[in-house]
Image (tube, one colour):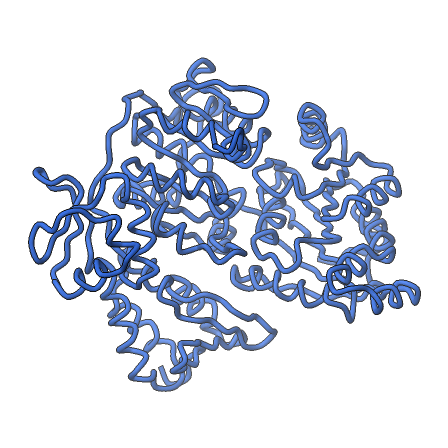
Length: 557
């Protein structure tokens, strides 16, 4: 294309001109294989990585399609060396295959004996292999399936897992589509997500918060028709999953068990928290062993991007079972996306937030950064603080509390969440606003009561800590005011924006405010978090604190 929106460079970076009329179309096209790195106002920067290319390959894209995309949207000729590198990198996926052999069990095969010789020479990989069958095949220890895939990925030879799955214990599960007093049906993107997952056997589905990830999980369970283990972030999430399964499937109360700190029920469908599974007693993960002993046909990992290290190990041991990861973003702040790819599976479906929004299934969002000035005393305290204290100093500025109070007043009559990281800041805000606070020490029953009253409109404003980041269903929340966050976490930005994305009964736009202290590292961290917004196609406005609306009539669409 003579005047395309992309500039493709030999260092594997892609520049996207935001103002170009084809920028949205191009962004969607390259998102399948390139990762957003920086998102300033006019030119976004993407990088082509091996993991991105292997995810694309697993999802059915080939090198020719990737190259055609770059040719179609590039303003200048695409560097020839880059084209060769893309082709060779994508060709690495599937050159090694894990298969089931009727005589030898699990085997690693290749069409190139030199590749097999290369990986088998590594000490860690060799320890997982058994006898050599022939020049192109070697036996794999049955328990090593997950660990081997992870090591092969690190070696640059991602194996395609064709070894199949055990059936698990049969347990009939059906969806209740188009039945009862409140009929419903799978949306097309949900149906496609399940079909792609089932065809691949295991993998990750990426959908916006509010787009029905739980329903995708329920549909996968119906397709499997087996006992299912669902891993979730907390007890509230477990109970929301149970309520949704009772509503969307033929499962009954007696068929669904909760396995958490408070309750230990093993049922045909068991919903367990990550926390209870990763609790150590006498040096061992006792609950991991207990759950591993069941003959599950399907494992579902909610918020898969949060998987703790012990669950990665558990997943490595459960490779013979189908695994579905659900998330709004595959970004991991610890850089372990490769382990998700190897141990859960590649990305099978990824729906851009803006696409789902355009179909009316999630609310449109107005993202606003409000910049505040530190008081002189706060600036001095910030300037003289140790590096480890600087962020807390600027993130908890009193100026933010004042602006948060103004925004709450401006949005009177709406359902508002005030979200932060530091408990002393949240205590002060809850007192200033005279509203309830939900934090880590809030008992589960009290959390459930407050969230229920918020959903019903009896409480219009809640102050919440990071305990509300994940898997909390608050459909009518339409305003979020973020006063502090987990440094530059894009993962957290996705989850907090996601609290607002359920479509509103009156079709109103969701408002997502982030309060940022000017001329501090708070601004640097905010820029990193906003990369997620840019990646999803959301622009954000910047307001000075003096221009913040103070009453409903000051708001502008």
